[in-house]
Length: 90
Image (tube, rainbow, N blue to C red; front, side, top):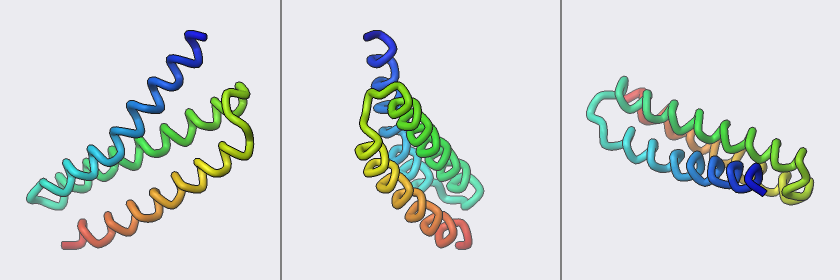
């Protein structure tokens, strides 16, 4: 359906945005600029998690698959938070 296609497209866009913003932040010389892009990455990650929740609620993915992917997304979030703490302090 169009709704499912649109949701998949949004998930793909937000998923690609996470590492893209991390790379963008890494290339910035000043921690203030870096932090901005790391925050964008966090926002995109939260967007993915919400879109997965919607997918589960609409029964596009199973509860089990939702839990698996959300666990992975949470791990990425923990790594990103740790990375931000180390990089922004510099």
